Length: 70
Image (cartoon, rainbow, N blue to C red):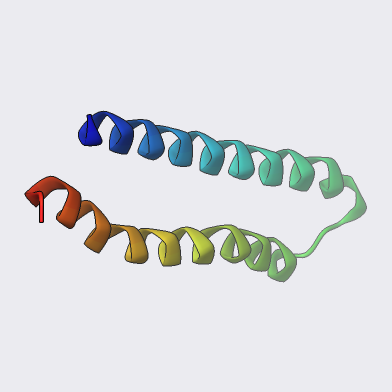
């Protein structure tokens, strides 16, 4: 049961991350006609990636505990 819940949580996280990246990409495409600069785009992608890295770093020990059953 725990592994099923883990897979559901991973699926939801991946889906939300992809939706967030698609939203950023769509927003950036709409603003290209205004001459958006590269530095702003990079900060937006970092704004999306850094929390994901932090979340993954925190989740890995929890996943190990769930899988090993301790």
